Image (cartoon, helix red, strand yellow):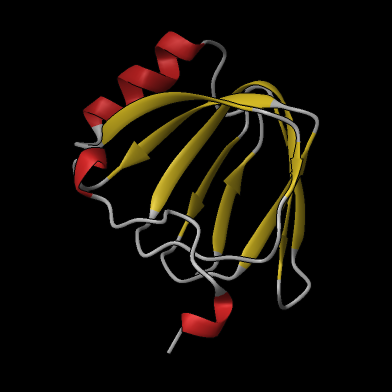
Length: 113
């Protein structure tokens, strides 16, 4: 699996937070500024609930999706992708304590082995 998307998955941020916690994830609410990021990857899987705004995600292999308020995406670790957005808010559910994630969060594709 690269991405698993559920459009119109939830109605409120409270529902997103509750579902992430019910699944045993550590939910964090994040406000993302406008960006057109370079390709990168993460060393963790995540479940992202878009609570406001929208974001376009493109993978290195050509998969593209547009997410809006109420949409949820599950992403595997080590998927090379980039985000294009004018800004959005999301609840991110992490399987591990977010303070323990390695830095930088966005890793260079050249480092992927």
